[in-house]
Image (cartoon, rainbow, N blue to C red; front, side, top):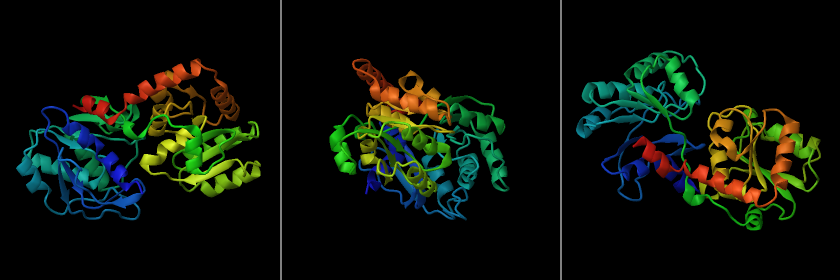
Length: 359
C-alpha cells in the first residue's frame, strides 16, 4: 500500500544526514502521529544509519489539530544522555512539542544551537497558550532553515533576527524517472490513445483544478485530463466536468502511493499545476524528474521551476490553454533538451543533495 515508502520519505532527511561524514544522528519521534493523510507509527530504519528513539505521545490529535501533542515522559532524560551538539527541530514553532523541546534544551543542553525548520507561509496569530510557546521557541532559535523565503519571513515577523537559509522539500529520485507512456496508461486504466494533461495533488480550491477543467474544455476532443488526488472539492469538480461535457475524458483516480506517483506524470503529455497559491510545490519537481513537460501557476512555483517550465497567471484560462497546447505541440529536439535540463534541475532537490546543504 506504499506506507513503507511513505515512512521512508518522512525519514529521508535523517537517513541522508547520517550518511554525511562526521555526523551522528539521533531522531526522536512520537510513537503515533498523523501524516500523509493517515495515522502512522515510527519504525526502525532498515539499516542502522541513525538512531531512532520513539517516545510515548500525549494528545496526538485534538479536534482535528495536531499542534497540541507532546511527550509525557522521557525527553529530558534522553536529551541529557545524548548531550547533543545541535538540536534540529522539524516541527512548527507554535506546536506544544516545540516549546517542550526548547525548554528541555535549555535545561540540559543549553550550549546546543536550536535550529528551526518552519514551513508556514503566512503570518497567523495563534491562540493562547500556543502563541506564548511560539514566542519562546522563536526567541530560543539559533538558526532557521525555511522551506521557502516566505516561511523564513513568517518567523522573522514573529521576532526572529538570526541567520537563515532556504532548503526545500526533497524528492526520492529512485522512484522517479521516465517511463513508457502507454504502459503507464494501461496501469492506471486510462485510454492509450489521445493526449492527456495530468494533475496530482489535493483537490482543494488553491490548486486551481477548476481552471484546468475550463482550459481542457477549450482543447480538441482527444485531449483528456487525469486528476490524481483526494480532497473536499472532488464532488464539485466532477459536476463541473459533467457540465462542460468532459465526463468521458476526465479521469478521477484518487491518491497514489509514493512508489506509483510517477505513473501520474509519465502517463501524460504534460503536467499542470495551475495553483492560485502554492507554498512549495514538490509535485512540480517530481514531474520534472520524470522528464514530462510542466505548466505551473502562482505562489512559490515560478521561483521553484525557474526557466524549466511554462508559467501562467492564476485563473487565466486562456493563458493556461495556450501553454498546455504549446507544451503538447513542442517539436524535437527543443522538447528533449528542455526536459533534460529540467531533470538536472530536479536532481538538485534530491534528499542527498539537500543533505549536503544541511550538513
